[in-house]
Image (cartoon, rainbow, N blue to C red; front, side, top):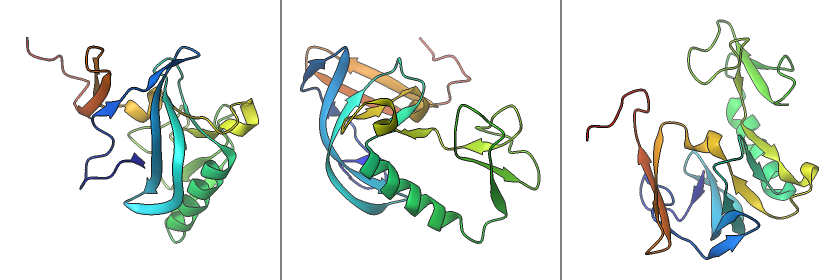
Length: 156
């Protein structure tokens, strides 16, 4: 969803600016949803694989949430509040079989960082990297990722 956009690939590789508050600061990015811009540019991004969820600043979160809700119109899903840890979940006519909570719902794993004191910092957490291999290149000060089937062990 965050991009220095080039075709279908987003944000790889990313240059590390420096380590702040135990996070890797990635610089700034533009926020997209399904290839469409949210008009949110220059977002300060940090990477924290220790955070379960991703947190966006209030303005970025509201822009993304609004676009997402517009995209969901007409779909056979509805908002549910069965999951207490994630405020935005959808329930279908049948339980979802991938990326779901214990109730078979699909949940939005991006939270409003302004509500937890992050200010304008946007934290990319672990949930945004499901089925991705993360590569840290400390010598070149870069982080990159690529799609992967994380259910299979890599060949050595």
